[in-house]
Length: 83
Image 1: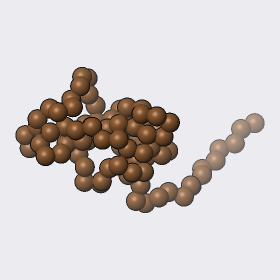
Image 2: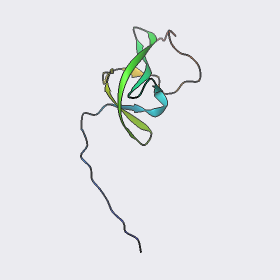
Image 3: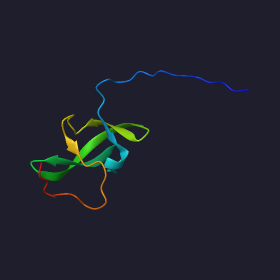
Image 4: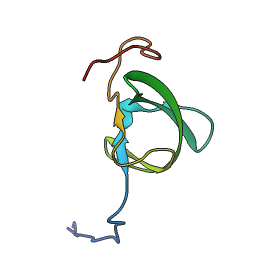
């Protein structure tokens, strides 16, 4: 015997999330991401919420307009970027 179910959960429509690969853990509910500001990559501490698949909710520390480094292989802090 088996059952099939579809659940619809309440979702916050203004939720900001980033790829899990973009976040380094920094404490229990905090993380570090790298953002592009003033032509340079800078470290930003963010508060984290729920993980949903390959994305994690950011509850504070980022603006929707921030550009982040989604994946990196080495340190990018302070790297200059031309736009």
